[in-house]
Length: 122
Image (cartoon, one colour):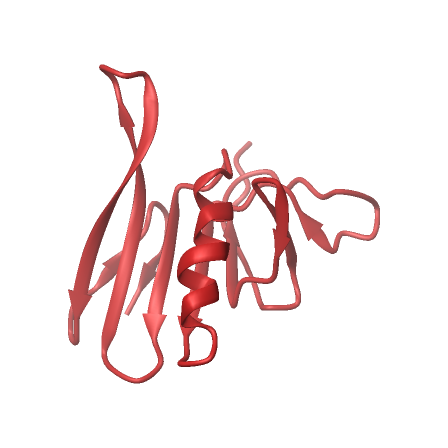
């Protein structure tokens, strides 16, 4: 039986690619996988959200995003601007010709709805 999606705050450590990150928001749909019995390191995030500030934007867009893109379970990640009504949604796509996973960018403005695989954020 499928488990519903669950959302975690920034205290949840996430194994992303070859590193560990603390996203601002973490979503996982289906069965959750943790590194150990302490349940503080999530291994299979479905959705990661970063709220960009002037001091963290470079790190979030470059270092963290590189980790995000190598996380097999991740289907989407969002960058949310702290200073304007702006959301960037990165959704993993499968390139059937190359048999690889790619990513595309969708920019949204104020008033638009962000629809993720299983969640709707307004």
